[in-house]
Amino acid sequence: MLAAILILVCFVQLIGYWASESGIRDWYTKLNQPGYLPPEALFSSIWTLLYLLMGLSLWLVWKEETPHSKKWAYIFFF
Image 1 (cartoon, one colour):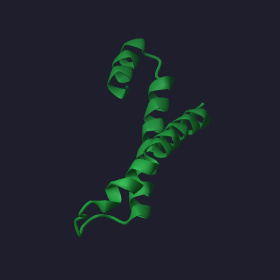
Image 2: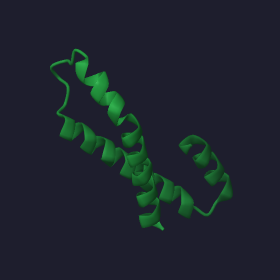
Image 3: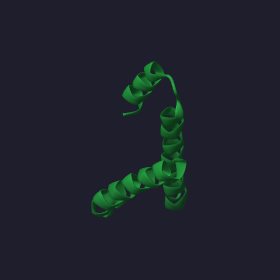
Image 4: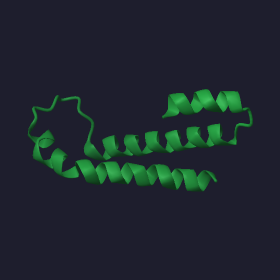
């Protein structure tokens, strides 16, 4: 089940990437960037890590057996 949730979360990340890719190329690269901006490879790696951690969090909630705690976790997660 964990693998399915991680695949789902990564799929959602890809959809977001594909939806915003053209907009990023058009206007984001033309902005004045600060000197402390991380490299693009690091930035995308951090986002991937965050999405994987969100998938892990969702899995932990999913396997929880107490319905009351699940309800609040789903409310805050989504």
